[in-house]
Length: 374
Image 1 (cartoon, rainbow, N blue to C red):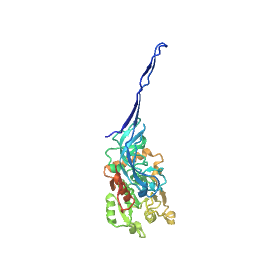
Image 2: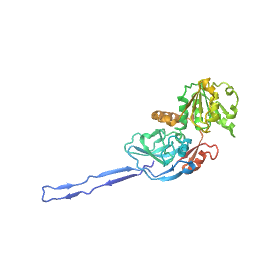
Image 3: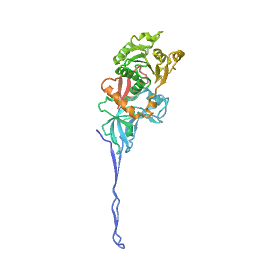
Image 4: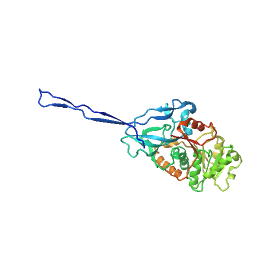
């Protein structure tokens, strides 16, 4: 393991003696040796943006100079970081919370401790860590942050999952736990089932004995998509057009009416989720990919007493949830390590960042999650 370069500046004074024959004795003037040690990070390559706008236009890769690693800080060599929709929204300037520009992109990832400040305890070079809670600036080869911003994880953690575990899988877990009490045998319904959150919901639900009803878009290859989701544990998978019937619940056979619905699309796809919900059911919205509003029939409120809620992971993380977040990340990583939680990703070399960005922007059709490998 390479260690950070250390620049040691030593100032050694020269002893100066003078004899004064007119005085008794002698005066001696000498300076003591003083040593100052400063740890610096290596130079870093980073994806930056100086103003908000289309990510493929405003981002560029630059070389950053070394920075000082202060006594309570840790320098981490990044290993992997994803391109999430929220990263794109931050660059575009439409996300509610975003770093001040100019900024380095990226919000989550995984890295290896490269060097530590003199006062840091509990972390050593070679440790595997993730920023927890996640924070901006992970699209660079070396990141320096305060030691309490890093969470040490098992060295056996799969790198691609460690780098993507906090935003999407944690969102799926929190939504299954925070809005209604679900027991084995219950069911949930969701749209956007092919998303990373959707895939995690399917697997976490199955792990707990909960049935999942999943809605996907009508597109070429939908039969293959259905088989992939069922292989993950989905009980039912429907295209939107299949649900244009008067009574969608007649399609469920022996699955109970769901108590919880998850919506990341909006528009008609949200209305389809509402159709499935049982009396006093809850629909949680965590995204709006269609950019269309949610329309709710009056009867859904009056006669079914449905509840509409929203979930935003960043708000949850900001509510003093650091320890709880880390415990759940460890739990999710154990599931990934055991093969009980998986999702499709594409690892892309950092030098090919803009190719990965184009895929994340949808320029090449439907693509797996793009994960930058440093």
